[in-house]
Every structure is written in structure tokens, then in C-alpha cells.
Length: 224
Ligand code: ATP
Image (cartoon, rainbow, N blue to C red; front, top):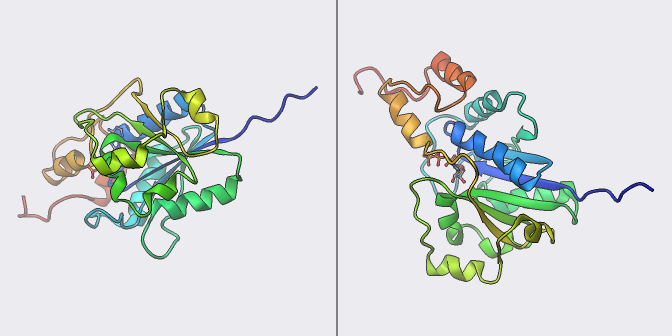
């Protein structure tokens, strides 16, 4: 007898990726392993609603993300937020993924600890749980303190293991500490590039090469 088909497990990992770095990519790989994801859609946002405008165009950030992912199994550079007009609300992206993968798929929105702490300020945050689970990745240097609004949003949703998360298609929250937490940030990388300092081993070589080739993130001459 053929065993029943396993329910798909699909991840979404959004961000500015300005630029993508090893903290993002290693987290993506370890998240796929920890949750046994079939695919992780990494999605650059054109103009994230709660941030200043990125220095480098969305298309350039997507190209760097593609270069960084290379042939890594299960990671996908997904441009759907760049193809949509209007603000890049995660809710709309999750709706699109839900429609692609169907009602039974386990849909997981992955966030680093810093992004998670701001979740209550997002667009219609309670509706995110009608579409997906949320998995929070510990990130070195960020406090675990939660606001009252966040505590209210999470009430009754938290689980403490992957099996409990995967028991339903959406609606739960799991906090994880992945095996290799990295204290790398895109802010730190941009500052180093602006000062023309080395970024070796903070991001993939292919991304470093592309940034150097296009002279991205440099201050104009005299601006240092
Ligand atoms: P910036 O320094 O410009 O704020 P960033 O390094 O935080 O950038 P983002 O593109 O803003 O990168 O982050 C996208 C997602 O990746 C967020 O959920 C963020 O928490 C997560 N993330 C970023 N860096 C790491 C890291 N080193 N480890 C785990 N998660 C990370």
C-alpha cells in the first residue's frame, strides 16, 4: 500500500536583504532542517512598511539574493513582493502562498527575534495567524522582552516543539534557537562597505564579488 502523501511544509522568510548575508542564509538552511521544510521562499521587500528606503534598488537586492542562494537546496529567491504594486504587506504574500499551496499545507512565516518584537505593529497582525504559523529565530544581541500588545497577540498560540506546530496548517508560534546563531547584520555590512573595510566571510563570496563589481553601498568620494 502506498503511504499517505506527506503534507507540504512551506516557509516564507521576508526581509530587506540589503544585502543578504550569511546570517540570513545559514538561518534559512538550518530552519529547513529543523522544521523539515520542503521549500523556503526568501522574499525581498520593495519598500518595507516600517523601514527607511533601502540604499540599493529592489532588483539589485534580488540579484544579490539569487547570487547568495546559488544552488542551495530548498532555498528560493522569490520575487513576488517586487511584482506587486503597493506596500509589501506580509499578509498579502501569505495569502498568495496559501492560494498556491492549498489549505492543508503547513505555511510558516520565519522571523528573526528583532522583527518578531515589532509584530504587533504590522498590518492586521492577527490575520497572519489565519494563514500561517510564525517561527521566531533567536538572534544574538536582541532582547527577548515582549510588549503588552505582542503578548496579547500571541496569547494561547505558543507551542514548544515542531510536532505541535505542524499539527495544524496555521495559527501557532514557535521560538527556536538554531545551531549556528550569527551576530551578522546588514547594517554592519553596509557600514563596513561604506568605509571600504573587509566584509569577507560575512556574506557569500558571490555576493561580495557582485557588490564590489557594481560598487554598491560605497559613500561617494570625499564622503568618508
Ligand atoms: P538591517 O541591519 O538592515 O536591519 P538585517 O541584517 O536585520 O538588516 P533584514 O533583511 O532586515 O536583515 O532581515 C530579514 C529577516 O532576517 C528578519 O526577520 C531578521 O530578523 C532576520 N535576520 C537578519 N539577520 C539575522 C541573523 N543574523 N540571524 C537570524 N535572523 C536574522
